[in-house]
Length: 429
Image 1: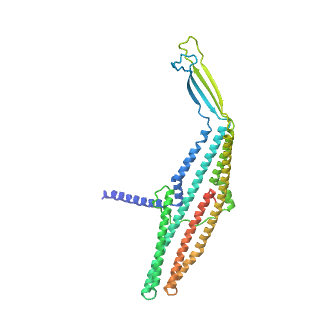
Image 2 (image 1 turned 120 degrees about the horizontal axis):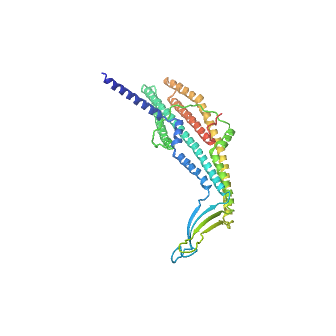
Image 3 (image 1 turned 135 degrees about the vertical axis):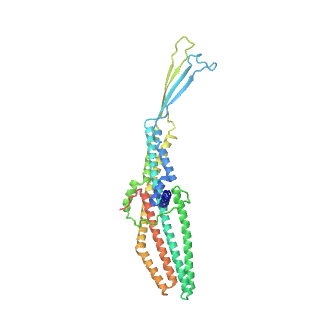
């Protein structure tokens, strides 16, 4: 008996562990909105690619701002070609030298500044990519949430219509109803089955899109929570959102850095009117083995400069090019700013519209529609309401409930769009 108890205890512990593991796994399988965004930030390959590009560009400024590598040379001078003997001719020497190219003062600093501005723009692009990824994840997540609620409503209405069919068939069998009522209920049930097929297909596509953003297999199952907060916040005024975006939107910051980089490249192009330098020194060793005199070695020094004699076709054209590039970047910045303000206005308008719809459906339309269905059902059972009106009232309630969840989903999608456009989460009063 005593030997059985430890086995039983271990078995119970194993069963308990298994149940806890299954429960934990089920809990983990529920993908909340926060979990989805966190997974996307960690695993999305598109974001990783942009981040890697920014890291690569951050390594450029120090490279282009550093002097060119010096050149070490080895030369054999005045070597006789008949014997190739270094002792035959007095001017034969073995020469070792070093030279250094020196850009005109200011060029290296401008090169480094331009690359630095470009690296800053790339860093802002990473932040912008994060916001866009968050926006896309949130939008698809809310679309899935709406589709789940719509499927629940469809299935509940299918069950209800099956009851309607049974009621209609019972009344028809006892001579109190019409066959057309039975056919009508079956037709509406078939329509709901068709709606379910459409919703299931749409959900599969949305699931594949979200899995792609999370770097998961396209067919991996996604389970969302059954309930979420249905409270919608109050937004700041549009003028305040404009100010927030001007200071916070990474896209605009990136474009400003691109303007700075273009301005610096223009200044660098103007510097190309001035020459670059090259300085060097070489030491020539002469072989004194077969001579009675001590022949001195030679020291050579050199200084060379580039001569920009093709100013009109080269340096001047480069200045024109950089000037046009600067204007292009300024126009891009202004165009992006106009687009940002338009997107803020659009997203704000979409949010207010859908928020008002949510309030209207929840507090007015849906309760009234439910009361209407209950009244119609009671009246039909005592032959005071015809079956067609009963079915129509139920379908109307189904449509209103579906529209409520769609409006709630679209309101939260508009919020996701708005936070991405502004570039920060704090957009509420």
